[in-house]
Length: 400
Image 1 (cartoon, rainbow, N blue to C red):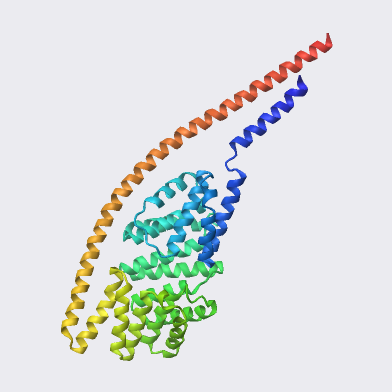
Image 2: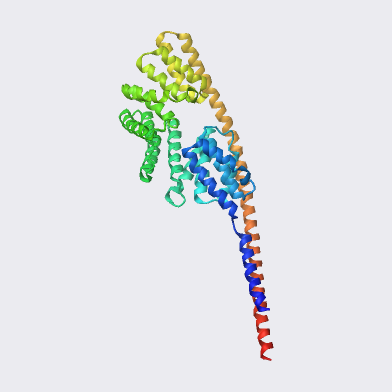
């Protein structure tokens, strides 16, 4: 009997271990692919989208952890495609899960995208809160995604600029650039964040110093389509500085990008360039193109420029129309922001309630797991006692 008892115990232990394994092999393979797509989305977004779609069928027969990682990947892809979020519901669910079951890196990424979505919804306080939560993981190298950290600093810098808190905007931009230099991941985008922040602080000397550094890095990277917004911004800064050699170089680069890919920033920048040159009709033509594709929040600066041009030209009727558009747009924007804050407040209340329920369930699950482990341990002890007693009994039988 002893010959059969030992193999039986071994098989029982293997079965228990295989049943309690946190991830099946399929999950591990899928998680590896999700991580590969996550990295790919920084280099080739179209390919990342295609691979992500191919994983859909596999993901939804995988573990909940794998599904949450996949959902976070899709939020990242939508974010990179500049598709604004309509609510924070999906990211709240992911954050709530990752806080209970995710790694440090999972939490860092989820917090960043939650902050980004709140920024899209014009809820700056919560955007700042979650960006800072994400940055808490910078101090832990094994949990830190340095690209996410740099994006956090960039987002915080932009939020502070919108709030006219220029010193904090500069501090965040410089912190992001220092991290990029330390990790060898310096990009023209992060250099330009510093230039933009100094520009908002009316420190033209520092602004142009970093703008020239960003320009040099832009020409090295040669990823002009991805960097079109900052190349457009550089163009009007160099125009204001009187460096039309760089303006013409940037204009030639941006003209090679198909027109339907041009953002409102490009048209706004072209308008400023022509305004600086004194070609006011051309400036107005580009400002009108900007108004046709920009969001209400983005139109305010363009309307201000148009108001000044029309007033200078003596066309007071059009100047008045621009002023009224600006006034109505700002009023509608404030009203929309109040509605978003109200909706987000309710959403956060629901989120906190969900967290409390999940914590209760997690505590109950821990008790069940503990009970299960205890039962297995008791079972093993019983088997060992039976083995020992059987062995002793056989020994006595042989002795007699």
